[in-house]
Image (cartoon, rainbow, N blue to C red; front, side):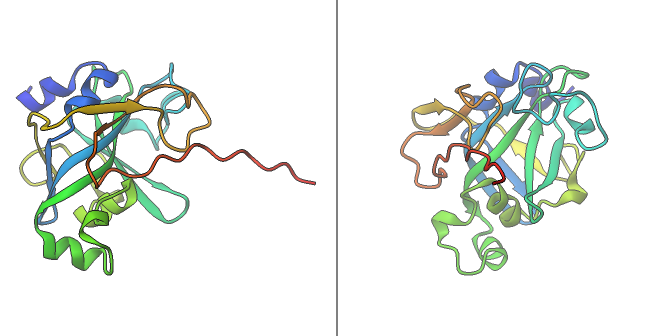
Length: 195
Protein backbone atom coordinates (compact mmCIF):
# COMPACT_ATOMS: atom_id res chain seq x y z
CA UNK A 1 0.00 0.00 0.00
CA UNK A 2 1.34 3.47 -0.87
CA UNK A 3 1.37 6.28 1.67
CA UNK A 4 -1.63 7.90 -0.08
CA UNK A 5 -3.60 4.64 0.08
CA UNK A 6 -2.69 4.28 3.75
CA UNK A 7 -3.88 7.83 4.47
CA UNK A 8 -7.16 7.11 2.67
CA UNK A 9 -7.82 3.78 4.46
CA UNK A 10 -9.47 5.36 7.52
CA UNK A 11 -13.10 6.27 8.27
CA UNK A 12 -14.52 8.63 5.63
CA UNK A 13 -15.46 11.38 8.10
CA UNK A 14 -11.82 11.49 9.24
CA UNK A 15 -10.26 11.18 5.78
CA UNK A 16 -12.38 13.92 4.17
CA UNK A 17 -10.97 16.92 6.08
CA UNK A 18 -7.42 15.58 5.53
CA UNK A 19 -7.93 16.09 1.78
CA UNK A 20 -8.30 19.85 2.20
CA UNK A 21 -5.16 21.53 0.89
CA UNK A 22 -4.15 18.42 -1.07
CA UNK A 23 -3.05 18.84 -4.68
CA UNK A 24 -5.00 16.90 -7.30
CA UNK A 25 -3.54 16.74 -10.81
CA UNK A 26 -5.11 15.51 -14.04
CA UNK A 27 -5.28 16.65 -17.65
CA UNK A 28 -2.45 19.16 -17.28
CA UNK A 29 -4.15 21.01 -14.39
CA UNK A 30 -3.40 20.94 -10.66
CA UNK A 31 -5.95 22.02 -8.06
CA UNK A 32 -5.61 22.69 -4.35
CA UNK A 33 -8.70 21.08 -2.83
CA UNK A 34 -10.77 23.58 -0.80
CA UNK A 35 -14.08 21.74 -0.24
CA UNK A 36 -15.11 18.08 0.08
CA UNK A 37 -18.01 15.94 1.33
CA UNK A 38 -17.88 12.53 3.03
CA UNK A 39 -20.17 9.64 2.02
CA UNK A 40 -20.28 6.32 3.86
CA UNK A 41 -22.00 3.11 2.73
CA UNK A 42 -25.02 1.29 4.18
CA UNK A 43 -25.25 3.55 7.24
CA UNK A 44 -25.51 6.76 5.16
CA UNK A 45 -28.82 7.48 3.35
CA UNK A 46 -27.01 10.16 1.32
CA UNK A 47 -24.55 7.64 -0.14
CA UNK A 48 -24.79 5.93 -3.52
CA UNK A 49 -23.96 2.70 -1.65
CA UNK A 50 -26.76 3.00 0.91
CA UNK A 51 -28.77 0.18 -0.67
CA UNK A 52 -25.79 -2.04 -1.42
CA UNK A 53 -23.39 -2.76 -4.22
CA UNK A 54 -24.41 -2.06 -7.83
CA UNK A 55 -22.52 -1.76 -11.12
CA UNK A 56 -22.70 2.05 -10.73
CA UNK A 57 -21.20 2.24 -7.22
CA UNK A 58 -18.87 -0.80 -7.35
CA UNK A 59 -15.73 1.37 -7.26
CA UNK A 60 -16.80 2.81 -3.88
CA UNK A 61 -16.07 -0.57 -2.28
CA UNK A 62 -12.34 -0.13 -2.80
CA UNK A 63 -9.54 -0.45 -2.63
CA UNK A 64 -8.85 3.06 -1.32
CA UNK A 65 -7.00 5.46 -3.60
CA UNK A 66 -9.24 5.16 -6.65
CA UNK A 67 -11.42 7.70 -8.42
CA UNK A 68 -15.20 7.14 -8.47
CA UNK A 69 -16.90 9.21 -11.18
CA UNK A 70 -20.59 9.33 -11.97
CA UNK A 71 -23.05 11.22 -14.15
CA UNK A 72 -25.63 13.42 -12.43
CA UNK A 73 -28.61 15.51 -13.51
CA UNK A 74 -28.22 14.07 -17.01
CA UNK A 75 -25.37 16.45 -17.84
CA UNK A 76 -22.56 16.62 -15.25
CA UNK A 77 -19.73 14.37 -14.12
CA UNK A 78 -18.71 14.41 -10.44
CA UNK A 79 -15.64 12.76 -8.91
CA UNK A 80 -14.87 11.17 -5.55
CA UNK A 81 -11.78 9.72 -3.92
CA UNK A 82 -12.47 6.22 -2.58
CA UNK A 83 -11.39 5.69 1.01
CA UNK A 84 -11.89 3.37 3.97
CA UNK A 85 -11.12 -0.33 4.24
CA UNK A 86 -11.54 -2.40 1.09
CA UNK A 87 -15.00 -3.96 0.93
CA UNK A 88 -16.67 -1.13 2.89
CA UNK A 89 -18.09 1.53 0.58
CA UNK A 90 -17.02 5.10 1.25
CA UNK A 91 -15.83 8.01 -0.82
CA UNK A 92 -15.13 11.72 -0.58
CA UNK A 93 -16.85 13.97 -3.12
CA UNK A 94 -14.48 16.60 -4.50
CA UNK A 95 -16.60 19.77 -4.30
CA UNK A 96 -14.21 22.63 -5.07
CA UNK A 97 -10.62 23.66 -5.61
CA UNK A 98 -8.28 26.43 -6.63
CA UNK A 99 -6.32 26.04 -9.88
CA UNK A 100 -2.62 26.33 -9.01
CA UNK A 101 -1.03 25.18 -12.28
CA UNK A 102 -2.45 24.75 -15.77
CA UNK A 103 -4.58 27.90 -15.55
CA UNK A 104 -4.81 28.36 -19.35
CA UNK A 105 -5.83 24.72 -19.81
CA UNK A 106 -8.54 25.08 -17.14
CA UNK A 107 -9.76 28.34 -18.68
CA UNK A 108 -10.05 26.68 -22.10
CA UNK A 109 -12.32 24.01 -20.58
CA UNK A 110 -14.42 26.52 -18.64
CA UNK A 111 -14.81 29.38 -21.15
CA UNK A 112 -16.04 32.59 -19.60
CA UNK A 113 -15.63 31.45 -15.97
CA UNK A 114 -13.77 33.68 -13.55
CA UNK A 115 -10.58 32.23 -12.10
CA UNK A 116 -12.40 31.84 -8.76
CA UNK A 117 -15.14 29.79 -10.44
CA UNK A 118 -12.98 27.49 -12.60
CA UNK A 119 -13.35 24.58 -10.14
CA UNK A 120 -15.96 25.96 -7.74
CA UNK A 121 -18.51 23.14 -7.56
CA UNK A 122 -18.12 19.40 -8.24
CA UNK A 123 -19.04 19.43 -11.95
CA UNK A 124 -16.86 22.47 -12.64
CA UNK A 125 -13.96 20.80 -10.81
CA UNK A 126 -14.26 17.75 -13.08
CA UNK A 127 -14.42 19.87 -16.21
CA UNK A 128 -11.37 21.93 -15.19
CA UNK A 129 -9.39 18.70 -14.57
CA UNK A 130 -10.89 16.89 -17.58
CA UNK A 131 -12.11 14.06 -15.34
CA UNK A 132 -14.74 11.99 -17.15
CA UNK A 133 -16.68 8.77 -16.74
CA UNK A 134 -13.72 7.03 -18.42
CA UNK A 135 -11.68 7.80 -15.27
CA UNK A 136 -14.01 5.77 -13.05
CA UNK A 137 -11.91 3.25 -11.12
CA UNK A 138 -8.56 4.85 -12.03
CA UNK A 139 -5.91 4.47 -9.34
CA UNK A 140 -4.40 7.67 -8.00
CA UNK A 141 -0.81 7.77 -9.19
CA UNK A 142 1.37 7.78 -12.31
CA UNK A 143 -0.54 7.65 -15.56
CA UNK A 144 -3.83 8.82 -14.04
CA UNK A 145 -5.09 11.39 -11.61
CA UNK A 146 -2.54 12.02 -8.87
CA UNK A 147 -3.02 13.22 -5.32
CA UNK A 148 -0.39 14.86 -3.14
CA UNK A 149 -1.49 15.18 0.46
CA UNK A 150 -0.47 18.43 2.17
CA UNK A 151 -1.27 20.17 5.40
CA UNK A 152 -4.22 22.51 5.10
CA UNK A 153 -3.21 26.17 5.46
CA UNK A 154 -6.15 27.71 7.22
CA UNK A 155 -9.01 26.85 9.54
CA UNK A 156 -11.39 24.06 8.49
CA UNK A 157 -15.16 24.41 8.83
CA UNK A 158 -17.80 21.71 8.62
CA UNK A 159 -21.53 21.65 8.06
CA UNK A 160 -24.36 19.81 6.32
CA UNK A 161 -23.83 18.32 2.88
CA UNK A 162 -25.24 20.15 -0.14
CA UNK A 163 -28.60 19.28 -1.69
CA UNK A 164 -29.25 16.04 0.22
CA UNK A 165 -32.61 14.63 1.27
CA UNK A 166 -31.03 11.58 2.99
CA UNK A 167 -29.18 12.45 6.22
CA UNK A 168 -28.86 16.16 5.39
CA UNK A 169 -28.02 17.02 9.00
CA UNK A 170 -24.68 15.19 9.06
CA UNK A 171 -21.88 17.78 9.24
CA UNK A 172 -19.82 15.89 6.64
CA UNK A 173 -19.12 18.79 4.30
CA UNK A 174 -15.67 20.23 5.02
CA UNK A 175 -14.12 23.39 3.61
CA UNK A 176 -11.28 25.82 4.13
CA UNK A 177 -12.91 28.72 5.97
CA UNK A 178 -12.88 31.97 4.05
CA UNK A 179 -11.54 30.48 0.81
CA UNK A 180 -13.23 32.19 -2.17
CA UNK A 181 -13.33 28.99 -4.25
CA UNK A 182 -15.66 27.20 -1.80
CA UNK A 183 -19.12 26.69 -3.32
CA UNK A 184 -22.30 28.13 -1.86
CA UNK A 185 -24.34 25.91 0.46
CA UNK A 186 -27.73 24.87 -0.89
CA UNK A 187 -30.12 22.66 1.08
CA UNK A 188 -32.18 20.02 -0.74
CA UNK A 189 -35.30 21.26 -2.43
CA UNK A 190 -38.54 19.66 -1.36
CA UNK A 191 -40.20 17.35 -3.83
CA UNK A 192 -43.26 18.77 -5.49
CA UNK A 193 -46.34 16.63 -5.28
CA UNK A 194 -48.42 16.30 -8.42
CA UNK A 195 -51.70 18.21 -8.31
